[in-house]
Length: 137
Image 1 (cartoon, helix red, strand yellow):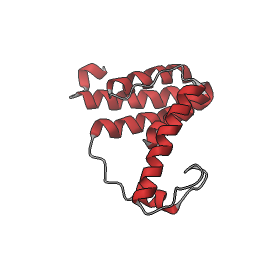
Image 2 (tube, rainbow, N blue to C red):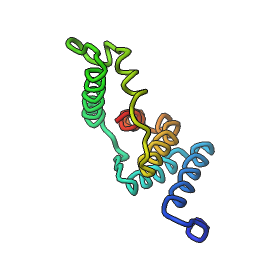
Image 3 (tube, rainbow, N blue to C red):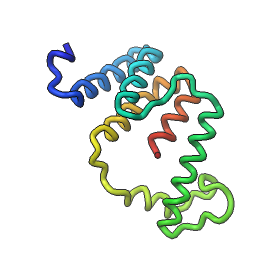
């Protein structure tokens, strides 16, 4: 039915996003994750299902570097300690001042990542952490 009624690929992806939410609400977490990761892959945001602690560490460092850069641009001090240890108001301000996103695929990617959080929490905490980091990036 989705193929028959969807006018464009974006419509199909939005339908699959709804399916991901429904599967999660039904407690079919593994299936929701499988569908969601397939949609993310189509959107150019591939995330593997079997995320390891090492994968999370890599994403943590990327996120920390991006937040450090945002804080520096916002006039914050990041000279000592991890940026996440010394949460600075300049980081928050930099995130809030970021330009509005106009890329429909990126918007949908964020929606799908958010929709997967509950299922990932139930199934794979490393995947949950990966989704949160990728959403911030």
